[in-house]
Length: 218
Image (cartoon, rainbow, N blue to C red; front, side, top):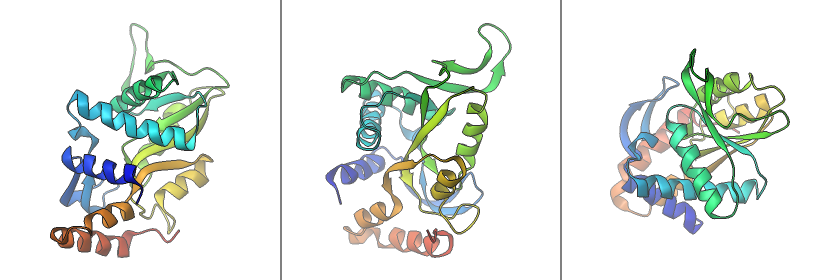
């Protein structure tokens, strides 16, 4: 496993972002582990998270200038942190996010921050994709921006789960909307990391059992 992936998984555990137990995902599935970006609560933590996203951005997108979009609510801080991390490495990109409800006074509208212009590319930064529900909500919001293209989506973890069919939710999103979805790590990286300590045997077994039922076939 690449060193940055190991560092990232350790970071997720240390920050209590990666949890094990019994949870219900936005998709309604009962899951044995949970990724909660809401546990990022300090300046140091959010700065480090932004650095991991920036690493993934440069690896996949390069130095191309896009506009970062952080879906409310958890995506907002990710977009801000990622843009700061990118700027520190010489790539100054604008960012924006959505309101849950459109504002009917002041500047109005659903978006806050830089609103992309026709011909510009957007990169969505999210915490995780389970069934693709949140991404589809984002695409519905972004469809209001004329001539703006989504170039990619970045998430913390690829859960490698089925979407609506047998393919992974990420693969379905890619197929449906025509842009790639990248992750810093995937669930199999997490399993590999956990297997290095025998104390994690129960959690590893539960995740593998879950994937045997809900894991994507492609």
